[in-house]
Image (tube, rainbow over all chains, first blue to last red; front, side, top):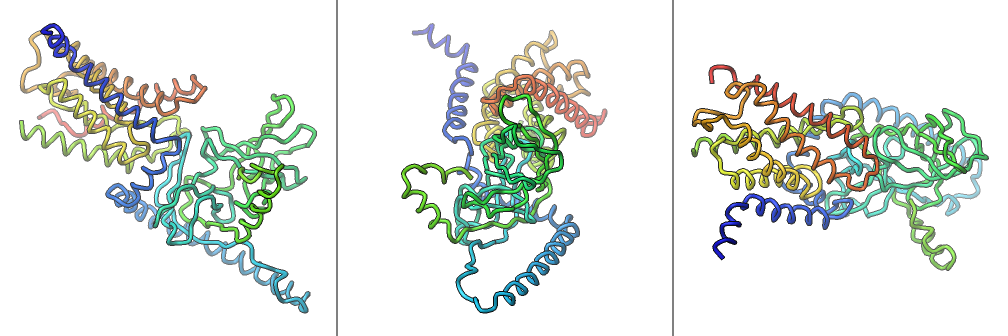
Length: 281
Length: 171
């Protein structure tokens, strides 16, 4: 007995280490891959306060840049508005439900974000009270950013393209063939497009857009441009894409809600053979 | 003693904020180098502190860092490694007559070679543990090793420069 006590005293530091290490590792293990709850909890307490103050400061310093982007986007939208009027005049006998609104856009600003990890995240200052729900598409200046995951009352967490679990269906603008967009760590400006067969020719500089097959994003949202093609794999291209959204700089985003989403998804669920098809972004 | 505890606590809180608000925002070579300078607060704990005290303080610093950035438990786990390695290094590097009460673990008091060995070993242990736990599922071992080494070197450089800036030769 005395020996055991002596042993405990002799190695108390080791025992302390192992005891606390087990606590720490089990907390890591239980918090799961995306660590959602912690990020959300943070957004409303002291740490959230500190981070929002820092964001306020950096946003203030970048006001000029943000204004430029906004005025450009305004001009662009105004141009589209003119197109719409022309269209309506051309088909002036049909005014009603033919052109039903499908997508709603909500603006939000970024409270906190990471770019230098394997599993990055973005926290937005809008939650369920602002009309945000999980699994909505997120874009910035018309460029693909990510998908909302967990949402609290006032905040939401976005899984950006630069998260190792992100996947979205995209197409090459020039010939319309489609593949999957993934990110495998490293450079936050480069993602990869896989699953495009080698029979399809891909050139450097080709534009990549979303397909609109899922209910997360409308079609033709800009993803980026082809930077290079790696053909060492057997049947498929592995395409490097320079992302159009600069994750180091974005401070405002638009969140897309698809008003017809439940209609489309419920239709898919009725078909036994398409189960699971709605799950990819 | 009370003064030492107060100074250490303030230093640790300052370093945690510095880490979360400034250093973690640096994006060097696309996330290849990510220095964790907040461990400087643990390295500077008084030499007279017992090893269990160092272990518990390190754990608390780790929880503080977890609270400010990312997944709960990651820094706590890595800082426990410091709690284990730090007392070893202090024992191994101790002068023959032991540390006297005026000595601090700084370049000015202990000399540059002593400091680089001491801080280098602790930093490497912490960074290695951290990056291995963080990307446990990454298969790219070579990239991970380079990341550990370069990040450790930058942390060490930043901490040493910090010492020359904070402690002049008078104290």
